Image (tube, chains in turn cyan, orange):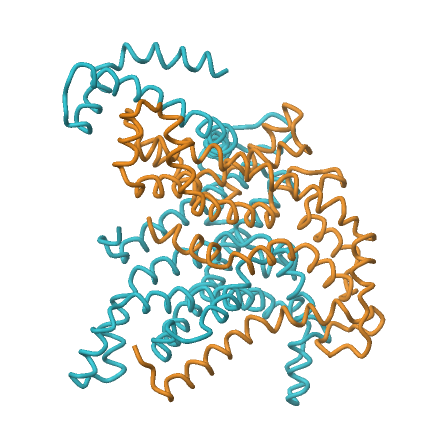
Amino acid sequence: MTVTANQHERTIDTTARPDSRAAGATSSGRPGRGRRSGRRKRSLVAYLYVLPAFVVFAVFLGWPFIQTVQYSFYDWDGLSPATWAGLSNYLSVFTDSALRGAFGHALILMVFYAVIPVMLGLFLTALISRANALRGMSAFRTILFLPQVIASVVVATIWVSIYSQDGLVNGTLRLLGLDGLARVWLGDYAFALPAIGFVGTWLNIGLCLVLFLSGVGNIQPELFEAARLDGASARREFFSITLPALRGQIAVALTLTIVSALKTFDLVYVTTGGGPGTSTTVPAYEAYNRAFNTGQVGSAAAVAIALTVVIMVVTALISRIQPKDVQ
Amino acid sequence: MRLTRREKVVDYVVLSLFALFAIIPLVGVLLSAVTPSAANEGGFALPTKIDLGNFATAWTEGHFATYMTSSILVTVGVIVLTTVLSVLAGFAFARLDFAGSGIIFFIMLAGLMLPAEAFIIPLYFNLRSVGMTDTYQSLILPQTAQSLAFGIFWMRNQFRAFPGEIIEAARIDGARDLRVLWQVIVPPSLAPIMTMCVLVAMWTWNEFLMPLVLITSEDRRTAPLGLAFFKGEHLTDYSLLSAAGIIVAIPIVVLYFFLQKRFISGMLGGISAK
């Protein structure tokens, strides 16, 4: 395999010579016959370094992704021959109420996964902006970040018991004399989706706080001291020093949390399976369910591609608030 | 910078409050796991009698010995493959000139954003047609492909920051690229390589969708997949479910407590460096 690949590179070598020479010359900056030929040889060997990774990537991720695009233009149940469907699978993302609902649910999850943690994280950061220098901060950081490393299936199992009939939430409500509010949270048409969203808030609030506090820790202390000497209020200090300095961290937090909201699958699969009714379906769940349970492979592929496009657009939009001089 | 007394008190109160918020569900699970099944109603009461037998029952009834073995095999496989491939490719992208390096790097980096749903459907049919579904390879290879986007990006950044004079000096001494890589660049880069390994370990161990789709026979289920099935069989036995959940989560949590700086810096720095 490697030998044939090597041979293949060599045939490319002769045809692509001017190109690779130019690349070698610009980067070495020191032309010379021996060096140039050394460069060229090295540049071909470079493909061998990348090839194993590229093959694994292409076979198990890149090509299947292109096939997903292809599938999305067909009606296929996974068994019988596929029939051309044009754009109808994509149109149904907008017209099929089940799919529209799933994307709508993802939007609501975004509020719980991203908006609340980021806003709350910023508010707390304003309140305790210099906590990063605190003794014991690393212990706090470890605990705040802990939910992020626990398998989502385990997280789901934990919250199923918290939301159960006699679980922590209902127990606390009864303790406060609010028995009327107690309910089977994950079995309730109105409350199942917010209940799942709240798990996202629990997951992401610590991440945002850790990220923002470390960002404030990177701001030069002189800036704060100067502001205090000038008699700036805490509010002013936050809006003119802290917030602008945190742009990079805010971009990272938004990217991580929004993408995690859009990708939600494990949590829904384990806690509600999309129910009750279709009140907690999400795009990733619809894609899985249609492809592997209900035999709507083409539609599933279109949902997956639509989800991918949404993720890419959101990521691109967020990167605009990231300062350019970060690197 | 000095913190005033009042500031410190506010800081500690806020941090403790949110640390409590993060930890209460986890403490609840610990309590639930040591409460005898008969006395457990899903609440977070302090157990009157500690029963460690739940772990043993969950372990044997849930066949977690098998599932944990599968998870270990798959995780180790993905770590080894990802490390070797990312170090090689990261080195090429950081230090070697070749036509198309920018575009190839960009394509592989785009893999970071791809949700698994965007490739797992054809992947399942492809693997099935060559008889590869329901094997460990069918989990190891796609998850390696998924980890490579991060791994290559991470290693390229590390190798770019590596002092060029040292590499040039080794080259003048006649060392070939591969020797430069393994003997000059890799040894001082073990710390970032470790960071990559723990992150890949976490992602692979915790992965759910891939085994859900690609594994059908019970003895190849990974730990999270096993837990999902176990939950289906013991819907309201919260003691057993909690014990099983702890069994599944504990390897990564222990790793995290030892290497928390690597976890946090990797998960946050990996993206912020972009």
